[in-house]
Image (cartoon, rainbow, N blue to C red; front, side, top):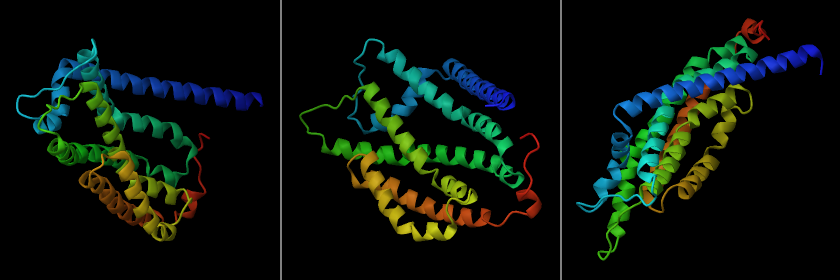
Amino acid sequence: MSEAHEDSFISHLIELRDRLIRSLIAIAVVLGVLCLYPGPGEIYDILAAPLTKALPEGTKMVAIGVITPFMVPLKVTGMVAFVLALPFILYQVWSFVAPGLYAHEKRLGIPLIISSTLLFVSGMAFCYFFVFGQVFSFISSFAPKSITPAPDIEAYLSFVMTMFLAFGIAFEVPVALVMLVKLGIVSVEKLKEWRSYFIVGAFVVAAVVTPPDVVSQLSLAIPMCLLYELGIVASRLVSRPAPAEDSATVNPEN
């Protein structure tokens, strides 16, 4: 490796480190604000509301571990802080990779950041406001009369984070398709040909990551199929040939 290439590699590592630090600082700042107001306890109560509404009246969740009542609400607050800081984090990622892109590719930066954030948050919101209520009501309806459900707060957090991640990523389907088409990996015609395979895959994924009830599985599979169609439409809009001067122009910083 030549000295110039080595210096360039080191400078990229330094830039990557700086952007990671900025992202961590952003999360820490948001976390600090949330700890002051409304506080980890209040935030966890909001997260637990769909489950507590489905439990028998007067039933509360339990904390088995000694420090669980402190750590679990703090983890939930950290998750909320990450989501709120997500636009800034995505901007840092984009700023790191943008210098290596063509001019016409850079114009997708801000729209991708905004759409990725909105879709991820929309997936989490859909899961929280619609899916959780259906899932917990289904589970409660099958509970024997001889037992009193008292879920552990740490197990609930693990379940919620898994579901949020599944729905958040699932709602990113249009962004993924647009990127694949824009990078020339697939064409819009291929996406149309693969539609039936994606539908089958969506129902398989839904069956794996959601609880074993039809409502929650359909709640994930159907939006994924609709978002796939939305991704095809968006991909058709961005697949138009770029102007010759844009596609031939690379950022002079490279």
